[in-house]
Image 1 (cartoon, one colour):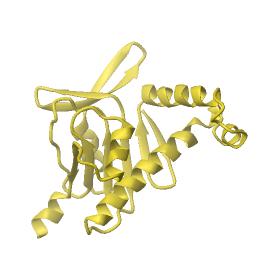
Image 2: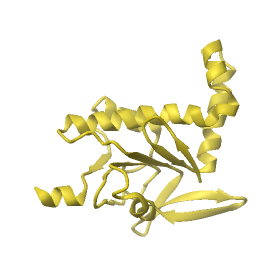
Image 3: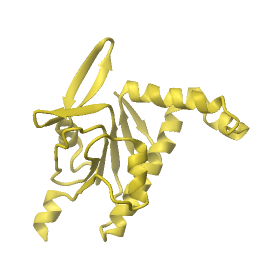
Image 4: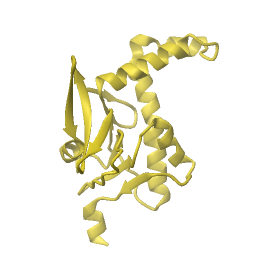
Length: 174
């Protein structure tokens, strides 16, 4: 797992998802759409900056959506970006270590950061549509297959398979 600090939050990204971004950037650099300024700023040796900018777009979209629902702006944000799946009622993400896949329950990640960040965003497939909650943080995730474009659908307020879970402590206070 690799941790990246962006302008708007912290991103925990699996090494294989990070490699996917590197390949995407490499493909983009070899097109006419990628101008000289982009080549300078988003060179392959600056892959973390490229990931941070992409994730900041997602952070901002989710933040604006939460604000539009009348909630206070989340200041501290954290995102999990890893391949995942769910079976037998447990949602897990994985990290490749050599030839091995190490599977970890998404709830473990949520418990580690709940209350330390106002907003937790999970970008990991959840084919079993397992529901999870946080006690003190807003929790945003997609039920089903997760792609960044799905999160951008939220920005357009289209009907989607998004789950926005307000903190349990906030819900009890009402």
